[in-house]
Structures are given as structure tokens and as C-alpha cells.
Length: 239
Length: 239
DNA sequence: CGATTAATTGATACTTCTCAAATCCTGTGG
DNA sequence: CCACAGGATTTGAGAAGTATCAATTAATCG
Image (cartoon, rainbow over all chains, first blue to last red; front, side, top):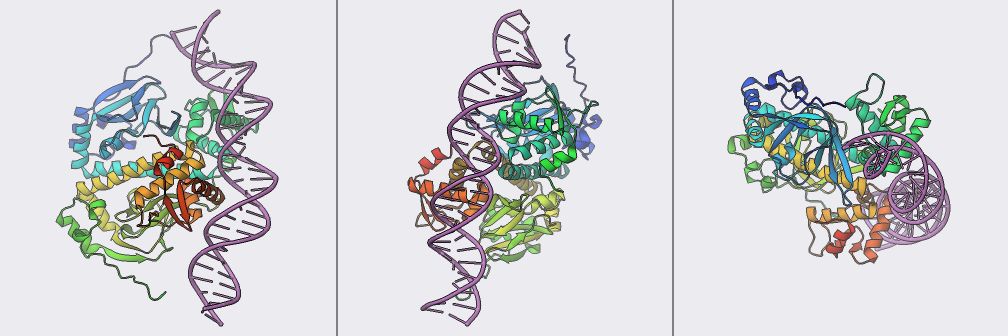
């Protein structure tokens, strides 16, 4: 591998950002967008780097321009529980700033990731002055709360097999598929296990099972969902 | 039992409400409080009554004046997963209204409960016009999100014994204790099981275990936390 | 290439669930 | 007040589901 391209092609002004429509900054007007654009700065995280550390006090929020990250808490033995994965347009660190509490989770880049950093003061300023932005953030928070509720019910009531099928479908819906049909996200078996709350070995065994039944195809870390319908049944999703 | 006292002594104006300081309406000024007070109405729910139904579209929010309720989702076999318990000052239904989605959970009164009903229109009006209120609700949502994260990690990584001890401590912190030292909340064994994500029989067995070890005392549905320190160890809480 | 780290598989132990049966409790109607 | 129906609680036994530990193979990175 020669030198890596790390130049961020992040637009200088939020108005030109293609991700804006799916971010907290959608449907904002220009005075406020100017304010944010003026104060924001670009930050780059290489794969594996810690973007925010559980227990720390963030001095601002990140809005993901491109890349992928995992958000996780550490349990008692240091085992990480992945709460959710974040990608383009995702907002990070706002909960800690708004609650004025230390971060409840760490965020680590899963691949090279470009973000916009918006300092706490600007973020709060816009939140307090612009009801539209405030409502956007409120809706994001409410959405995450809804997702959290689903995860709780799944962890409490489904078995590991069902949760695995469920998370595979979720990955497909969130990250889509490559031309070759693989999920467009690369996770270690351990990370997969840490999403569904099981031991790495259990996740591996159940993946093999799904594979040998023809519901998925495995090629190293690449996973293809061959039979989503059957997977949905496996996940005990009825809707 | 003779006739029951169901008269609500809910104040007509929010400014006089003793719960206001711990509700979404704290630190609000009078024009907005007037607006809410003018439009709100009192509603009474008897123990066991459904206050909001999962899947429905609430026409307003409830702010609990007095009483207790459980908020739960139903899993696949109809088994209820209790996400959280709600008491004085708690706000209900706002997530659905803000996300413009059907309710993700049902809410049922655990005891006779008085609430204030605030119609959707008034709620949204104040949200959109008063940044302070909007921020209050945002903070509530962020708090719930933080709690949800803890629950997820607990469900994913702790065993049933630890989760039981944990929830008992949580009940103590949330509802306090009666003069006799019992938790000031009455739950069936099944409800307890539905909070920690286990079978009723398992919850019962582990309660007996804690009891015979002297960490708690059981008297019907009444539970006293005799040795909170030891319970905390059992819950694998280290802080 | 060598050294780590990740992935896999097997064997075993432990936790938790499920089903069944017995007992206890509670509210109701006579 | 009593008897009773229905639900809640409890306990036991056996079955499933998962975790843990160990050993091996594969993949990855400098």
C-alpha cells in the first residue's frame, strides 16, 4: 500500500454538504448555517482511533461527513457493548453536552472517518436560538430512544440466534450492500458478538449455522445476506 | 371496602403544582405556563387501567401528578418488557408526538394515578416557541437515552442474579422506602421478571435466594432491602 | 517471515427456561 | 361471614441454550 489519501473533501460551508439533509442541520436557514459553518472545523480519524472516550467531557459535537464508527459502553469486565453504529450525517456527543454529564459511551472509528467538529458554545447557541434546530435534535434523540427500546426488548426476550439474524438485517438496512452483494460494513466476529450481547464463539457458531443453511454467505469478514426473507423469520420479526 | 377517594387535588394552574420542579415544566415563565394551564385537563386512571396503548396515536401528553405507571413494549409472544417505571412529574407520550410515530410502548397505571393531559397542539406550540421548554424536553429525552444505554449493557452482559439485585436497588432509589422499610412500590413477581428480562420462576427463585441470605426481606409483594451494600456487590456495581 | 491477533471447533459446565403440580391469596357474590 | 373462582406464587425436575476453556488453524501487519 502506498500513501493513503486522507484529504478531506468536506465542504467549507454546511450549505454545500450532501449529508445535510440527513443530519441535524437539515432545513436550517442561512444565518444559523453560517454561524455553524464559520465555527466548525474538519477532523480526520483513522480506522481504529478513539473519537470520543467514555467518561470524558466533550468540548463539542461531531457530525460525521464520511466514514463509520461504533458507539459502545464498557461493562464490568471491560467487555464492550456496542449500542449502535454511526455513519454519514450522524451526530455524536450531543447527549453529553446537553445533559452536562460525562460521555456515557466511547466512539471508535471503524474505518477512516471525516467529521465536522462544532464547538460546544456554537452548538448550544444555535440550539437555544433556533427552535427548528432544537426540534431536529430532539427528534434525533427521540428516534434513538425508540431504537434503544427495540434493542432492550430484543435482548430481554429473544435468543442469540434470533438476535444475530436481526442484527444482520439491521446492518443491511443501515449500510446497504456492495456490488458483490456483501454487507457494506466490516466487523470482527467479536464486534458482531458485542452488538448482540453474546460470546464471540457463540456468534461464530451461529454464523456458520446460517451459512451452512444457505441463508448467508461468509467470506472472511464479508457477509452476504442470501435469503433475507428466511433471515427475517429466523429473527422472529413479524410485520 | 367502602367508596374510594378519587378526587384529584390537582391544582388548576401549573404554577401551583408541587411536582413542577421535577417535570418538563420547570423554570418556565408565566405566559407559557398560563397557556399550558389553560388548555390542560385532569384525568384519573384507576390501578390497572391502560393510559396509552402501544401502536396508537396519542392526541396529547400526560404529565403525572401523582401515582405510578409502567411503560412496556410487547415482544413476540405478547410478553411484556418493562422499559421503565414512571412516577410524579414524569412526562408520557412526547416521543410519539415529536417523532410523529405511533406509540412504541404501552403505559398502564400501577396504582390509582392522576395526570394532567396537555393536548398535542398546545404541547407543540410551547415546544416551538419556548426554547427553554424545548431544552427541558430534550434533556429528559437525553436522560432516558442514557438510562436505556445502561439497561442495554446490563441485559447484554449481566446474568439474571445481577440484574435482579440491580433492579431492586433502582426501585429503592426511584420510589424510596416506607416507614416499615419496604420499597414504596408494589410489583408482581411477573412484573419484576419483565423488568429484568427473565422468566417469572427465575425471578422468584432468585428473590428467595436473596431472602434466605439475608440481603432482603419478603412479605408478600413487599420487599425490604436489608443489606444494600451486599446487594450492590451482587449487582456487580462498582463505583 | 515472524509475531500477533482473529477465527474456528470441540468438550464441558453452568445458567436459565419450560412444564407441571401444589399452595397461597384476593376479590366477589351469596 | 363464608365459600369459591381465578390468579399469583412457589417449588421441583428436566431440557435447552449459552458460556467458558482449550487447542488449532487462518489471517493480518509491520
